[in-house]
Image 1 (cartoon, rainbow, N blue to C red):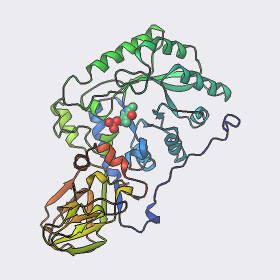
Image 2 (cartoon, rainbow, N blue to C red):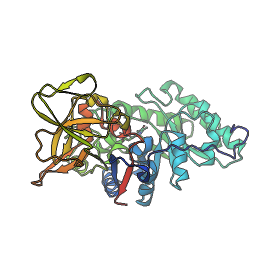
Image 3 (cartoon, protein in one colour):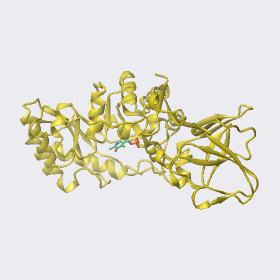
Image 4 (cartoon, helix red, strand yellow):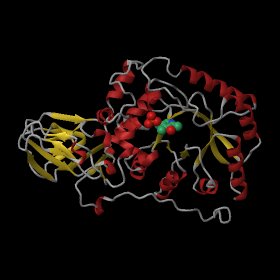
Length: 406
Ligand SMILES: *Cc1c(COP(=O)(O)O)cnc(C)c1O
């Protein structure tokens, strides 16, 4: 394996359906102009802090290569991913920006980290030693790393009791440069003013522990999208969902935000829309059932349209008999159980629906009079009992991404 031949790194290559390979009309449209616009809005919100865009999980489902390249050209300062594999994919796409790998698990891939110049987040002293060894084995220059401290999330990062040994391990590893000290907030999106106060105080304490060992990080960072809009200030910020034009707050006018932040939040533009076409249309009689388990029966004569997107495409099965899709600028309720590849909607109340009419699963649609209806990731999330992040990242690789606004 790699221990024996560190110069031949493994190739990690996740695959996704390409626009040229698909016949089905179901597609995600990714508007890169809106992505650039959101970066601009976030710059204003971040007030001088550097922006390291979070493009994990294939760029929140938007395609991390296209998103990464667009942001690089637009002048973003760095990128963050969760997995080594995701960082390698961006490097292979030619991206030169610093890339921070935040997932906390590196297995035996330290050589790949060094080879691809990925900046790693270290969360215990063992990882500091493993990275130092990989640098020594390759006789490479000291490598930048960010250290993570747990300030209340209890997920990754060293707990308070271990901060002094963590700091000493770093002091004893000259191969590792103290490029950053970071943490992550559990509650930045909660609707009350002091939701992140305990973690902020904790982070200051951690910084002091390192300082006591003579160690000062080049940068400190903690803010996800929600914390940025709350006005938290360190050296850099790590926005994910907001870059993709979706509010990190459940509430449309979140209480803890001041007027300026509220204004900036409302300027975000969704980057992804999802659409398909009706592939079958039928009239059914009162009492006729729709779908597996016959869970929905027509209360009257009904027109049922079949849309070729199902749970294998990332449309949650929890939307069965809940939620809607937009047809001709109107909401067509989802009826029956969502199947793997298809979903039925009731279009009885929408005049003049025909075969091959467009259907919008995320985004906006106009009716004949020009009235606009919008289906947001938050609305879909609420109907399926989840959050906007999961709606976006669930859209599977079977759905091709079409890029506009490049
Ligand atoms: C995912 C993630 C972010 C970005 O969070 P958003 O809420 O999408 O802005 C920032 N930091 C870390 C450590 C993350 O895992």
